[in-house]
Image (tube, rainbow, N blue to C red):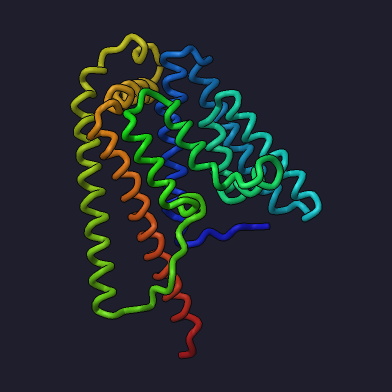
Length: 272
């Protein structure tokens, strides 16, 4: 059974991608730099294998019969849980994104944990808190957002009829777009400034210089900078604001693109 993403899911796709990058830097990165997890080759091979496995599961689930779908979904759910239990959280996120977020949650719910979708926000907060020495305001902010918005972060917001074109509606949408872009730029500017200010302090590191390639050394330095800057209260507030406004901006972009293609399709189908 295939899934067709809706325009309300663009932001949640961004959130999933952001979590992968976040865990790659602060979970996988710290395991490599500070906690003796294997080698950088092993870590990246595992992520590549998780991506390939996720794509294989995706194709398999599309082509399998309805009778065997439950069995395949069960194997997927077990694979995700085992990855998390053995500390491969980044790989579990990559696997679930490749398969499809809604599909993964559905199979986890059906095969292992009833009502999983209701506790996933809390599970993500626990994982975020375990990633590094995050300031409590970051965890509290993320928890509050996920609690208030609930499953909207998991499945996408329900978007109503946007055909209304009154002056008041247009002004409201313009004001909403202005606020989203304003806070997105402010938060991004502060995050960039703080990272830039701390970058030089981590330019000389025996751990980072031990990696053979420049991109690995850059990843190591960025991980080190984030570990130190995420104890700053304003940095964590800016990070939460950035994620929320970026999700809204991506949703608006997705809605605009889909509206444009829908208009083109209607024009082509209309009689000359």
